[in-house]
Image (cartoon, rainbow, N blue to C red; front, top):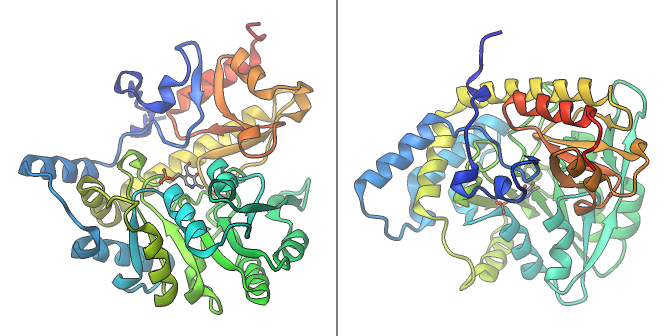
Length: 386
Ligand SMILES: Cc1ncc(COP(=O)(O)O)c(C=O)c1O
Protein backbone atom coordinates (compact mmCIF):
# COMPACT_ATOMS: atom_id res chain seq x y z
CA UNK A 1 0.00 0.00 0.00
CA UNK A 2 1.40 3.45 -0.88
CA UNK A 3 1.87 5.85 1.98
CA UNK A 4 -0.67 8.61 2.36
CA UNK A 5 0.32 12.20 3.24
CA UNK A 6 -1.85 11.67 6.34
CA UNK A 7 0.60 8.96 7.47
CA UNK A 8 3.24 11.61 8.10
CA UNK A 9 4.36 11.79 11.74
CA UNK A 10 4.59 15.43 12.77
CA UNK A 11 6.23 16.14 16.10
CA UNK A 12 3.93 18.49 18.05
CA UNK A 13 5.07 18.38 21.66
CA UNK A 14 7.77 20.99 21.05
CA UNK A 15 5.12 23.40 19.70
CA UNK A 16 3.31 23.29 23.07
CA UNK A 17 0.28 21.68 21.41
CA UNK A 18 -2.32 21.21 24.16
CA UNK A 19 -3.05 17.69 23.01
CA UNK A 20 0.56 16.63 23.46
CA UNK A 21 1.35 18.53 26.67
CA UNK A 22 -1.37 17.07 28.86
CA UNK A 23 0.45 13.81 29.50
CA UNK A 24 4.08 12.81 29.70
CA UNK A 25 5.76 10.94 26.87
CA UNK A 26 4.63 7.54 28.11
CA UNK A 27 1.02 8.31 27.09
CA UNK A 28 -0.21 8.37 23.51
CA UNK A 29 -2.59 11.37 23.35
CA UNK A 30 -5.92 10.51 21.71
CA UNK A 31 -8.11 13.15 23.31
CA UNK A 32 -8.89 16.79 22.40
CA UNK A 33 -10.50 17.16 18.96
CA UNK A 34 -7.71 18.43 16.79
CA UNK A 35 -5.98 16.36 14.15
CA UNK A 36 -2.30 15.42 13.96
CA UNK A 37 -2.42 16.21 10.23
CA UNK A 38 -0.79 19.17 8.52
CA UNK A 39 -3.20 21.85 7.28
CA UNK A 40 -3.87 21.83 3.53
CA UNK A 41 -1.12 23.64 1.62
CA UNK A 42 -3.40 26.44 0.27
CA UNK A 43 -4.19 27.45 3.85
CA UNK A 44 -0.52 27.52 4.81
CA UNK A 45 0.29 29.50 1.63
CA UNK A 46 -2.45 32.05 2.36
CA UNK A 47 -1.16 32.56 5.90
CA UNK A 48 2.45 32.86 4.67
CA UNK A 49 1.43 35.40 2.06
CA UNK A 50 -0.43 37.47 4.61
CA UNK A 51 2.52 37.42 7.00
CA UNK A 52 4.92 38.36 4.21
CA UNK A 53 2.87 41.51 3.71
CA UNK A 54 4.13 42.49 7.12
CA UNK A 55 1.30 44.52 8.64
CA UNK A 56 -1.09 42.69 10.94
CA UNK A 57 -3.57 45.37 11.96
CA UNK A 58 -7.32 45.35 12.52
CA UNK A 59 -9.46 43.51 9.99
CA UNK A 60 -13.18 43.64 10.72
CA UNK A 61 -14.53 40.36 9.26
CA UNK A 62 -17.96 41.91 8.64
CA UNK A 63 -16.53 44.04 5.82
CA UNK A 64 -14.13 41.50 4.29
CA UNK A 65 -16.00 40.65 1.11
CA UNK A 66 -13.87 37.60 0.09
CA UNK A 67 -14.60 36.03 3.47
CA UNK A 68 -18.35 36.28 2.95
CA UNK A 69 -18.04 35.12 -0.63
CA UNK A 70 -16.07 32.05 0.51
CA UNK A 71 -18.69 31.06 3.11
CA UNK A 72 -21.58 31.67 0.71
CA UNK A 73 -19.84 29.53 -1.90
CA UNK A 74 -19.16 26.75 0.63
CA UNK A 75 -22.68 26.59 2.05
CA UNK A 76 -24.17 26.50 -1.43
CA UNK A 77 -21.77 23.81 -2.62
CA UNK A 78 -21.92 21.62 0.47
CA UNK A 79 -25.56 22.05 1.52
CA UNK A 80 -27.34 23.80 -1.34
CA UNK A 81 -28.02 26.58 1.16
CA UNK A 82 -28.46 30.11 -0.21
CA UNK A 83 -27.18 32.43 2.47
CA UNK A 84 -27.05 36.23 2.43
CA UNK A 85 -23.84 37.90 3.60
CA UNK A 86 -25.79 39.87 6.17
CA UNK A 87 -26.94 36.67 7.90
CA UNK A 88 -23.36 35.94 8.96
CA UNK A 89 -21.78 36.95 12.25
CA UNK A 90 -18.13 36.15 12.93
CA UNK A 91 -17.26 34.72 16.33
CA UNK A 92 -13.76 33.66 17.48
CA UNK A 93 -14.85 30.16 18.54
CA UNK A 94 -17.88 27.91 18.55
CA UNK A 95 -17.94 27.57 22.35
CA UNK A 96 -18.23 31.36 22.61
CA UNK A 97 -20.94 31.27 19.95
CA UNK A 98 -23.32 28.98 21.83
CA UNK A 99 -22.63 30.70 25.15
CA UNK A 100 -23.62 34.00 23.51
CA UNK A 101 -26.91 32.36 22.51
CA UNK A 102 -27.56 31.54 26.18
CA UNK A 103 -26.84 35.14 27.22
CA UNK A 104 -28.89 36.66 24.43
CA UNK A 105 -32.07 34.63 24.67
CA UNK A 106 -32.44 33.49 28.30
CA UNK A 107 -33.17 35.20 31.60
CA UNK A 108 -31.70 33.93 34.89
CA UNK A 109 -33.57 30.78 35.91
CA UNK A 110 -34.59 29.87 32.35
CA UNK A 111 -33.94 26.33 31.17
CA UNK A 112 -31.80 25.09 28.29
CA UNK A 113 -32.28 21.75 26.56
CA UNK A 114 -29.12 19.81 25.83
CA UNK A 115 -28.57 16.25 24.71
CA UNK A 116 -26.44 13.92 26.82
CA UNK A 117 -23.86 12.48 26.26
CA UNK A 118 -22.49 15.62 24.67
CA UNK A 119 -19.45 17.84 24.22
CA UNK A 120 -18.60 19.12 27.73
CA UNK A 121 -18.88 22.87 27.06
CA UNK A 122 -22.39 22.32 25.64
CA UNK A 123 -23.35 20.52 28.86
CA UNK A 124 -21.85 23.34 30.94
CA UNK A 125 -23.23 26.33 29.01
CA UNK A 126 -26.45 26.65 31.02
CA UNK A 127 -24.59 26.67 34.33
CA UNK A 128 -22.02 29.20 33.11
CA UNK A 129 -24.87 31.56 32.25
CA UNK A 130 -26.94 31.20 35.43
CA UNK A 131 -29.43 28.89 33.67
CA UNK A 132 -30.75 25.41 34.30
CA UNK A 133 -29.85 22.36 32.19
CA UNK A 134 -32.66 20.16 30.93
CA UNK A 135 -30.88 17.08 29.67
CA UNK A 136 -32.30 14.84 26.96
CA UNK A 137 -30.97 11.30 26.69
CA UNK A 138 -29.67 9.36 23.71
CA UNK A 139 -30.96 5.92 22.73
CA UNK A 140 -29.61 3.21 20.49
CA UNK A 141 -31.84 2.64 17.49
CA UNK A 142 -31.87 -0.76 15.74
CA UNK A 143 -29.56 -2.25 18.38
CA UNK A 144 -27.58 -5.23 17.15
CA UNK A 145 -28.41 -4.60 13.49
CA UNK A 146 -26.15 -3.29 10.75
CA UNK A 147 -27.95 0.08 10.82
CA UNK A 148 -27.81 0.64 14.60
CA UNK A 149 -27.13 4.24 15.57
CA UNK A 150 -27.51 6.69 18.43
CA UNK A 151 -30.55 8.96 18.26
CA UNK A 152 -32.10 11.55 20.52
CA UNK A 153 -34.73 10.35 22.96
CA UNK A 154 -37.57 12.20 21.26
CA UNK A 155 -40.14 11.35 23.95
CA UNK A 156 -37.96 12.97 26.56
CA UNK A 157 -37.32 15.94 24.27
CA UNK A 158 -41.05 16.47 23.82
CA UNK A 159 -41.69 16.22 27.57
CA UNK A 160 -38.90 18.57 28.60
CA UNK A 161 -39.50 21.13 25.84
CA UNK A 162 -43.02 21.55 27.23
CA UNK A 163 -41.61 23.17 30.39
CA UNK A 164 -42.64 26.84 30.10
CA UNK A 165 -39.22 27.95 31.39
CA UNK A 166 -37.46 26.12 28.55
CA UNK A 167 -36.28 28.77 26.07
CA UNK A 168 -33.40 27.30 24.11
CA UNK A 169 -32.28 23.97 22.63
CA UNK A 170 -28.49 23.80 22.29
CA UNK A 171 -28.06 21.06 19.77
CA UNK A 172 -25.01 19.34 18.26
CA UNK A 173 -25.33 17.87 14.75
CA UNK A 174 -23.40 15.77 13.81
CA UNK A 175 -23.33 14.58 17.39
CA UNK A 176 -20.15 14.74 19.43
CA UNK A 177 -19.34 12.21 20.85
CA UNK A 178 -21.90 9.76 19.36
CA UNK A 179 -21.17 10.67 15.72
CA UNK A 180 -24.73 10.39 14.39
CA UNK A 181 -25.95 12.66 11.60
CA UNK A 182 -29.59 13.62 11.95
CA UNK A 183 -31.95 12.54 9.19
CA UNK A 184 -34.43 14.90 7.61
CA UNK A 185 -37.27 13.17 9.48
CA UNK A 186 -35.48 13.59 12.80
CA UNK A 187 -34.81 17.25 12.13
CA UNK A 188 -38.47 17.75 11.18
CA UNK A 189 -39.40 16.14 14.49
CA UNK A 190 -37.15 18.58 16.36
CA UNK A 191 -38.59 21.41 14.31
CA UNK A 192 -42.16 20.52 15.25
CA UNK A 193 -41.30 20.22 18.97
CA UNK A 194 -39.47 23.57 19.01
CA UNK A 195 -42.30 25.28 17.16
CA UNK A 196 -44.98 23.79 19.39
CA UNK A 197 -43.24 24.88 22.58
CA UNK A 198 -41.65 28.08 21.32
CA UNK A 199 -38.09 26.92 21.94
CA UNK A 200 -35.26 28.58 20.00
CA UNK A 201 -32.98 26.12 18.19
CA UNK A 202 -29.23 26.80 18.30
CA UNK A 203 -27.32 24.16 16.38
CA UNK A 204 -23.59 23.53 16.78
CA UNK A 205 -22.56 22.07 13.40
CA UNK A 206 -18.79 22.31 13.76
CA UNK A 207 -18.32 18.70 12.57
CA UNK A 208 -20.74 18.89 9.63
CA UNK A 209 -18.14 18.68 6.86
CA UNK A 210 -16.66 15.50 8.32
CA UNK A 211 -19.20 12.99 7.03
CA UNK A 212 -17.77 9.48 6.86
CA UNK A 213 -20.96 7.63 6.00
CA UNK A 214 -21.41 8.34 2.31
CA UNK A 215 -25.14 7.67 2.52
CA UNK A 216 -25.63 10.31 5.22
CA UNK A 217 -26.48 13.90 4.40
CA UNK A 218 -25.97 16.87 6.65
CA UNK A 219 -28.91 19.25 6.74
CA UNK A 220 -28.13 22.60 8.41
CA UNK A 221 -30.72 23.73 10.96
CA UNK A 222 -31.07 27.02 9.08
CA UNK A 223 -32.45 25.23 6.02
CA UNK A 224 -35.46 23.72 7.82
CA UNK A 225 -38.55 24.95 6.06
CA UNK A 226 -40.63 26.04 9.04
CA UNK A 227 -38.16 27.24 11.66
CA UNK A 228 -35.01 27.66 9.58
CA UNK A 229 -35.48 31.44 9.57
CA UNK A 230 -35.66 31.41 13.36
CA UNK A 231 -32.59 29.29 14.05
CA UNK A 232 -28.98 29.93 14.96
CA UNK A 233 -26.59 27.68 13.02
CA UNK A 234 -22.96 27.67 14.15
CA UNK A 235 -20.24 26.46 11.81
CA UNK A 236 -16.47 26.70 11.37
CA UNK A 237 -13.65 25.45 9.14
CA UNK A 238 -11.66 24.55 12.27
CA UNK A 239 -12.22 20.79 12.61
CA UNK A 240 -12.58 20.12 8.89
CA UNK A 241 -9.24 21.68 7.94
CA UNK A 242 -7.40 21.31 11.26
CA UNK A 243 -7.10 25.02 11.98
CA UNK A 244 -8.86 25.14 15.37
CA UNK A 245 -6.00 27.17 16.85
CA UNK A 246 -6.95 30.10 14.61
CA UNK A 247 -10.34 30.63 16.28
CA UNK A 248 -12.39 31.33 13.16
CA UNK A 249 -16.10 30.51 13.26
CA UNK A 250 -19.39 32.01 12.22
CA UNK A 251 -23.08 31.90 13.01
CA UNK A 252 -25.82 32.06 10.42
CA UNK A 253 -28.98 33.83 11.59
CA UNK A 254 -31.47 34.63 8.81
CA UNK A 255 -33.96 36.48 11.03
CA UNK A 256 -32.92 40.15 11.52
CA UNK A 257 -34.48 40.55 14.99
CA UNK A 258 -32.82 37.40 16.32
CA UNK A 259 -29.54 38.41 14.69
CA UNK A 260 -29.65 41.86 16.25
CA UNK A 261 -30.35 40.46 19.69
CA UNK A 262 -27.56 37.90 19.31
CA UNK A 263 -25.13 40.55 18.08
CA UNK A 264 -25.96 42.84 21.01
CA UNK A 265 -24.93 40.09 23.43
CA UNK A 266 -21.43 39.97 21.87
CA UNK A 267 -20.71 43.68 22.14
CA UNK A 268 -17.70 44.67 24.21
CA UNK A 269 -16.96 41.03 25.01
CA UNK A 270 -15.81 39.21 21.91
CA UNK A 271 -12.86 40.24 19.76
CA UNK A 272 -13.02 39.97 15.99
CA UNK A 273 -11.87 36.83 14.27
CA UNK A 274 -8.18 37.58 13.66
CA UNK A 275 -6.73 38.28 10.25
CA UNK A 276 -4.91 34.94 9.92
CA UNK A 277 -8.12 33.08 10.74
CA UNK A 278 -9.85 35.09 8.05
CA UNK A 279 -7.39 34.38 5.24
CA UNK A 280 -7.20 30.72 6.28
CA UNK A 281 -11.01 30.46 6.10
CA UNK A 282 -11.07 31.88 2.58
CA UNK A 283 -8.44 29.38 1.42
CA UNK A 284 -10.19 26.49 3.24
CA UNK A 285 -13.54 27.11 1.62
CA UNK A 286 -12.27 27.83 -1.88
CA UNK A 287 -9.10 25.80 -2.51
CA UNK A 288 -9.11 22.65 -0.40
CA UNK A 289 -11.79 20.34 -1.80
CA UNK A 290 -9.32 17.66 -2.94
CA UNK A 291 -7.49 17.73 0.39
CA UNK A 292 -10.78 17.28 2.26
CA UNK A 293 -11.80 14.37 0.08
CA UNK A 294 -8.46 12.66 0.73
CA UNK A 295 -8.71 13.34 4.45
CA UNK A 296 -12.22 11.84 4.60
CA UNK A 297 -10.95 8.68 2.86
CA UNK A 298 -8.13 8.41 5.36
CA UNK A 299 -10.48 8.95 8.31
CA UNK A 300 -12.83 6.26 6.99
CA UNK A 301 -9.89 3.87 6.92
CA UNK A 302 -8.97 4.82 10.49
CA UNK A 303 -12.53 4.40 11.69
CA UNK A 304 -12.83 0.98 10.06
CA UNK A 305 -9.48 -0.12 11.43
CA UNK A 306 -10.54 0.93 14.93
CA UNK A 307 -13.89 -0.84 14.65
CA UNK A 308 -12.23 -4.06 13.54
CA UNK A 309 -9.49 -4.02 16.18
CA UNK A 310 -11.37 -2.62 19.16
CA UNK A 311 -14.27 -4.99 18.72
CA UNK A 312 -11.84 -7.91 18.96
CA UNK A 313 -10.57 -6.71 22.34
CA UNK A 314 -12.38 -7.98 25.41
CA UNK A 315 -14.41 -5.29 27.10
CA UNK A 316 -14.73 -2.78 24.23
CA UNK A 317 -17.63 -2.17 21.87
CA UNK A 318 -17.33 0.46 19.14
CA UNK A 319 -20.21 1.27 16.81
CA UNK A 320 -18.64 3.08 13.82
CA UNK A 321 -19.74 6.68 13.60
CA UNK A 322 -21.47 8.33 10.64
CA UNK A 323 -19.43 11.50 11.09
CA UNK A 324 -16.58 13.20 13.01
CA UNK A 325 -13.14 11.78 13.79
CA UNK A 326 -14.21 10.79 17.29
CA UNK A 327 -14.93 7.22 18.36
CA UNK A 328 -17.44 6.84 21.20
CA UNK A 329 -16.47 3.49 22.64
CA UNK A 330 -18.44 1.49 25.19
CA UNK A 331 -15.93 0.14 27.69
CA UNK A 332 -18.45 -1.13 30.22
CA UNK A 333 -17.46 -4.70 29.31
CA UNK A 334 -14.08 -4.12 31.01
CA UNK A 335 -15.86 -4.21 34.34
CA UNK A 336 -13.68 -1.46 35.82
CA UNK A 337 -14.89 1.55 37.82
CA UNK A 338 -12.44 3.99 36.28
CA UNK A 339 -12.20 3.48 32.52
CA UNK A 340 -9.96 6.51 32.05
CA UNK A 341 -7.42 5.20 34.55
CA UNK A 342 -7.52 1.82 32.79
CA UNK A 343 -6.65 3.52 29.50
CA UNK A 344 -3.88 5.60 31.07
CA UNK A 345 -2.47 2.49 32.72
CA UNK A 346 -2.13 1.09 29.20
CA UNK A 347 -0.33 4.21 27.95
CA UNK A 348 -3.35 5.60 26.08
CA UNK A 349 -4.81 9.07 26.75
CA UNK A 350 -8.34 9.40 25.32
CA UNK A 351 -11.02 11.84 26.56
CA UNK A 352 -12.77 10.50 29.63
CA UNK A 353 -16.35 9.45 28.94
CA UNK A 354 -17.37 11.24 32.14
CA UNK A 355 -16.52 14.60 30.45
CA UNK A 356 -19.44 13.89 28.11
CA UNK A 357 -21.80 12.34 30.64
CA UNK A 358 -21.05 8.60 30.63
CA UNK A 359 -18.07 7.32 32.61
CA UNK A 360 -18.33 3.79 31.16
CA UNK A 361 -17.43 5.11 27.72
CA UNK A 362 -14.20 6.50 26.36
CA UNK A 363 -13.76 8.91 23.42
CA UNK A 364 -10.89 8.25 21.07
CA UNK A 365 -9.76 10.86 18.54
CA UNK A 366 -8.73 8.97 15.41
CA UNK A 367 -7.58 11.97 13.32
CA UNK A 368 -3.99 10.81 13.44
CA UNK A 369 -1.52 8.75 11.40
CA UNK A 370 -2.76 5.16 11.42
CA UNK A 371 0.42 4.00 13.08
CA UNK A 372 -0.74 5.74 16.29
CA UNK A 373 -3.90 3.65 16.22
CA UNK A 374 -1.81 0.53 15.73
CA UNK A 375 0.31 1.51 18.71
CA UNK A 376 -2.80 2.15 20.76
CA UNK A 377 -4.27 -1.25 19.97
CA UNK A 378 -0.96 -2.91 20.82
CA UNK A 379 -0.88 -1.10 24.15
CA UNK A 380 -4.46 -2.05 24.94
CA UNK A 381 -3.67 -5.68 24.17
CA UNK A 382 -0.78 -5.62 26.61
CA UNK A 383 -1.10 -6.19 30.34
CA UNK A 384 -1.67 -2.91 32.20
CA UNK A 385 1.47 -1.25 33.45
CA UNK A 386 0.12 -1.01 36.98
C1 LIG B 1 -19.26 20.05 19.20
C2 LIG B 1 -18.12 20.99 19.40
N1 LIG B 1 -18.36 22.30 19.50
C3 LIG B 1 -17.36 23.19 19.69
C4 LIG B 1 -16.05 22.78 19.78
C5 LIG B 1 -14.94 23.78 20.02
O1 LIG B 1 -15.08 24.86 19.17
P1 LIG B 1 -14.14 26.12 19.33
O2 LIG B 1 -12.76 25.64 19.54
O3 LIG B 1 -14.34 26.84 18.03
O4 LIG B 1 -14.67 26.91 20.48
C6 LIG B 1 -15.74 21.41 19.68
C7 LIG B 1 -14.36 20.95 19.81
O5 LIG B 1 -14.09 19.82 20.02
C8 LIG B 1 -16.82 20.51 19.47
O6 LIG B 1 -16.59 19.20 19.35
